[in-house]
Length: 438
Image: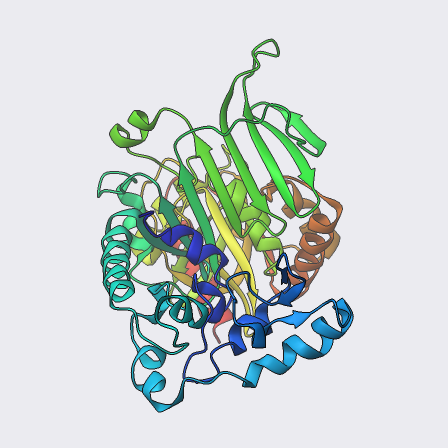
């Protein structure tokens, strides 16, 4: 028997009825209602009998095309079968209300072929359902993890077992035991697919380590070598149109087993994924350090040597460090909030915490410690945009980012933060917090 595929079911089960491998009706004794309602195909047997399922053998459930038309069969006859066959109270007490129904291969037509009774239970299918349920529970314990970042649950399903040493300990704060409402699905495979002769789509980007192709309803990322003469691939990723589902193929499974990984996607950085996802959620990733101090979120923006790590270490005793290198800014119903990430720099302290964003601070090393308000909104925008992390850039992505930034600079005050390493900036920040909080 082929084992269940929990990763596939999680990614594509859009509704409870669609997640079952068999046709069924939950808490409903109309045995064909689900099959017919969800069906987009039909079957015609060698004698011209048309029905909704190839296993249907009862002449009463097949339309004779020698005496009618396909249109009449599809539009009238098949829909009329929805209420024709019922299981009754016995079915509802047994198969219809069984807790293992999700994993059971039972269907009414199959029961008829076995027992000449559309509602008859089949004990050996009950045994298979038990095995499937046990298999999935064991699989989920060792092959699935949930991580929450900025209100997004990243569900990782792996063909190889996930252990306590698979991912770096920095992810521990972000791990969850169950998913939230907004779920992104990642499936890890450890054998590269054969792309020979396959249509890759329209190439929209090529710069090592990625070549990216746009397909009708998806994106194809190919991990390429810096050597233009080297045709080999080190990974293949197929993203859904919204980047909320990904099939990630990498080679060298032994490396996965023996290495501690610093990204969930196995990319150089998870920001490649997050930056795309956030645009759809009124947010963005940015090169910045963030802290939560006295219930307020402070975002310290600057390039790689601007002093982001220095700043959070100087202010460490004042509050919680969220991250010193990459932060997430997201607009919620109650305003902008900053969220910690696991993509840190020199300071390895990270947090899954969040806080209402009260101020943008653009770092400038100086021999003094003071804050200077930036009143020109265009100047604030000009300073912000270069620091925003840019993944695969498309016109619609930029439109969403610019709209979010426009709202941000209008709602959140911005400052030049001039500081040195003396630590006097702590008092400046304390005074600013007192004033901003009234």
